[in-house]
Image (cartoon, rainbow, N blue to C red; front, top):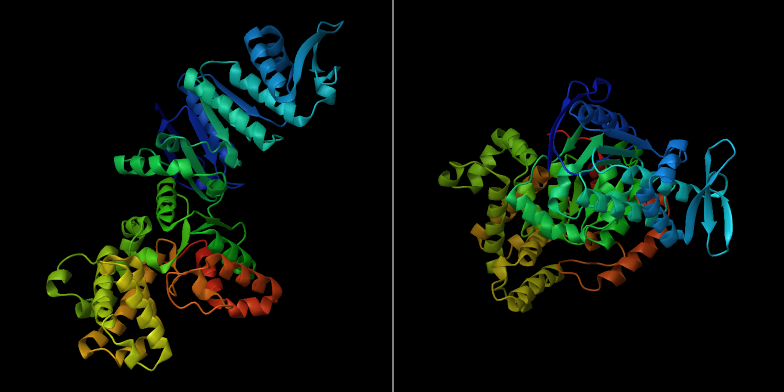
Length: 514
């Protein structure tokens, strides 16, 4: 880690906020959306490193290699040798210099495959010229600071990956400090948790954010996560308006519905990113929280009961702030569901979820004992059969998140019917469970997490009647639904998927009132 105290004011971008950062890595990334001030910030950083004794080079790939660059190639055999190896291996080409009558040198590219020679400046593609300029800047020093603005310009992804690997070699073996201003996920090369210290995220109309240090718990969390962090996931570094969902079916359905939300809700630039599981949602939530990006998450109902996301959301200060503001209004309800001893403690989101779990298990333990053959109502029978199936399948069913989820689904769907079959003290829990669930959903939304109250994405499908979790045959159901969406017009989509579109609209809002 490199310790250089920086302090930057740019009022027309951030108002009165001052950017202060002390800890840097040898490789640093400046990312964010267009218009967020990345280049201006990097120029100011260069000035501050310069004042503290560092040599600083600023490179922008808006022009070809200059005469000074070519002079370095001509006179520095070490750099020329490295670059010739690159050209030979990547393009089957080499480079030589031809002296003109006025004493200047012309770079000549030799195409070994076709035994042809031509002037680099006149005939070569932008990609090769770009990689040549980048490599010259990278290799010409073994110390000092190099700031590169948009290194991806004109570079194919394979060249971006190649240059990123060359940067790693240089930073691993020299005292070189690199800053990359980039919009390309191929340069988000986070191999170790400490690499996150070098990421600065710029935003529209607010100061850049960053991670100054990681706790031991954060380090361990990211150590396990980063190997699964792929190029597709890295979109969120370039926009504050990304929505994370659990799986690819969620991603596809929400992406199809995104164009149908109210245009004023802020969907422009929104992306839907699937992360591969509810625990991964929790990790992305944590990364975004630390980096200061405005993460939005749409999660399945069962994430309330057992997931990394629950852990992260329960510790989020936005949820705490929302509950504190609601305390006086909710106090009569709290007095109804909590004992005096419980009320003596702070009402936290975690406490509310635990109370919900306890109440659900109380109801579930009664319901699994029902004789289904004595009940005529089909919807009640279907619900009880699902609960009893889960009870028979799992030895300690009370601890299973799916069991609690199904109980909550049933209460939300057919709570009024269930109350006729339950003993009065248990029946009286049902409206309390509904109210408590809605309170929890609202508190979680303060942290920009939106729970699907009906269960998971399949419970919102219109072409199949899916009642309870878990879901089988998800892929078949998904393709049927996708084909249906493609076959109907906009008004039908807005009508049939109104609930999902409403959730999308909330998640697309630029800011929320707490």
